[in-house]
Image 1 (spheres, rainbow, N blue to C red):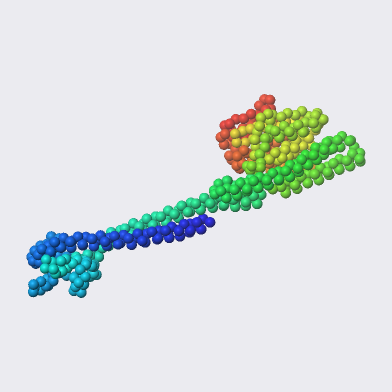
Image 2 (cartoon, helix red, strand yellow; image 1 turned 90 degrees about the horizontal axis):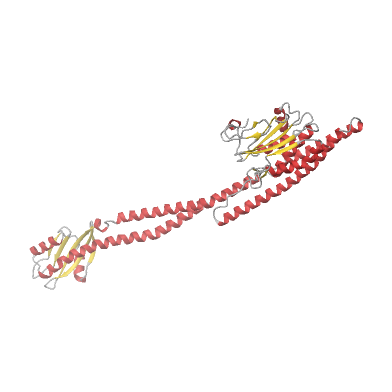
Length: 469
């Protein structure tokens, strides 16, 4: 489209330039010719009064010399009173042309070597016709024509170049929004649901961008609804399974109790397999897309209210910190809820009854940290646990919970770390990057990041000048 506009503009401007420049060039040439012959007529008119008074050669030579150069002017006198015809000055016109002018009695021009000759008839006192010849060189006829034509050509070329440049800019203004629309469609087709197109350019392209963004929002909403349904199903299944597992553990010994515990474990494995398969089949959305984003504090309060009932049944102390104010993060609500449920489920699954746990939310300048800690025995080998979260399970654990949390953090450019909590057990730290940039370990000490440090009461505080250990 861009080159088509350039070609059309080039053709139209060239036609307009030719239509105006060619006639104007011809008019300039005619004006120069008329100017040259008008000067020759004035010179011839200066000699006419003297011819009407006298035909003396000496006097006429002085008149010719005063009117112009004798090399450019000549006077042709006819035979008068038995005298021979007389020519004063250099003759260039032929006898036939001079005779024709005497016969017709009006001025004419004739072509002579090196230019043209103006033949002007003048009546003598005797009634005869003399002819004044004024030579007009070709250089005088074309004087200034070449310069005028060069100026016209330069103006025409400038107009063509300017029109091409303007057409190119207009083409870019039309093509770039179309290219962005194509790129957005490709990104959406590749599963990047955060792809959107800026609404700019001509009206038609702006409307197309609005329609594309609306369609992408609808796709994100539909997928979010499906994922929310799957997440709700996982929540409904996980909690009863946790209760069943805890109740089965209290049945004591015996074949029936062992069968019940084995059945619960088998059912839990099947549920984990179904959830893992559903998450693996889920398209990854862009963290910064319009369809993503939630209030982390609100989700934490909601999930802690859900798990608090089971915690009271088991005599577990729990607390929530940092969730009293809104904390916006570029993560879907269902994703954060699934990650919290996975970590809290691990607390109930891998720690004994009565073990305390806590969830802390810290809002930094460029990141949000969610800490899930407990007072259990802790994880002896955090690196192995994280590796299990990326692959197959071992020692009775599928690693699904850590895999869910890892995907959540890495979708924003953050990460997950396992360490020792202030309660004495395990601490899982979820770093959620707010700007969506990949955060290299070498850059964790950059100025303005969040630093975690332990205080005497086990709380977490911030320091703007040092990084998170």
